Amino acid sequence: MTLHRVSGSQPLAVLDLHTGQLRVNGPQWDALPPATRRFVYLHELAHWQTRSDDELLADQLAFAAYVAEGYRPAQAQAALQHILRGVGTDLAQLRLQFMSRRIVNS
Figure (cartoon, rainbow, N blue to C red):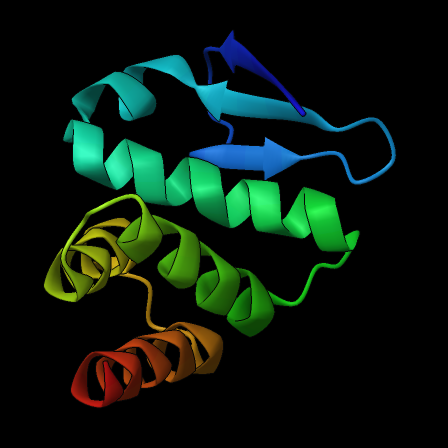
C-alpha cells in the first residue's frame, strides 16, 4: 500500500482496493494527531490486506494492530471518535458502538 498526499475536497482517506494507492487529504491529514493518523493508516491497511470495504472488519483489525503496537484501547476509540465527529450515518454510529464494546472487552 502506498500513501499519496492530495489536496482539494476529497475525504480524509480514499483507498483504491485494486492498486493499493491510499490518497489522503493533505491538510486534513496534517491536522490529525499522530496517534489518530496511525489508526487511520492501520484501518486503511486492513482494507488493503483483506481486499474488503467492510468498515467494521477494518476497524477490528486496525484496533488489534494499534493495541499490539502499544497504544491503549481508549486511544483507538478516541481516534475513531475524532474522525467520525459530525458523521451522522447509521454505519458511523455502529462503528462507534462496536469500538465501545471492544474497549469494554479488552
